[in-house]
Length: 232
Image (cartoon, rainbow, N blue to C red; front, top):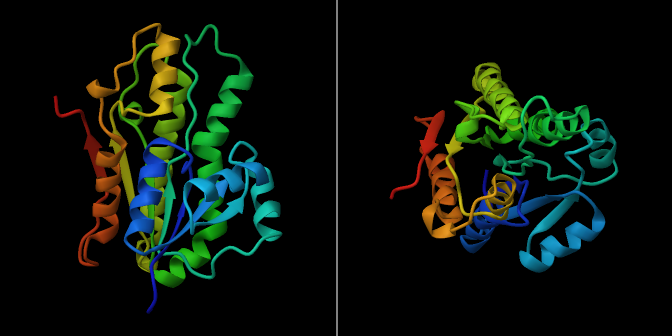
């Protein structure tokens, strides 16, 4: 199909999502951003001029269908980029059902439902679903149980989706960045009681480069899983 490629990005307010949205806009692609509410949508457009928005809260997966049904998503999608996430650390003995529910909703159930709702547009374009996971989706340290469980689940979601949608030409990529210099990482350091030095960690733009690399691979190849670690 002719015309600019069309992408929907979650988590574009900061960090990796913001870097990806900026890079896509800078090269002339059409960028849509998911916002949890109308106020956040206005903030995202101010931060990413020229982008378009859809309002839907990943923390409430059961309401996403209703929310998107009252808006006009793009007719086709070249990619759906799942980058939003949340984290709360704590030992299993202290984590409440509320923490588990919120973590699983934003990090796993929301992406699953958003993908389900947008699969027709992705199939039409033989598009690409990218899950920016985490090395916590491969192995888990103490006090990371809720976050790790959500990311292990996200890996399973991606693997199943890849097998199911391969006949439709939809590609699926899981990226597993280690610690990245984002506001979420700063929050993690606060919860860990450690000083935060962003220079020690991966730059969001470096992860954005891997996202664009996956998207831009020729159709004869599919990047399925990639782990990204600090270079120093």
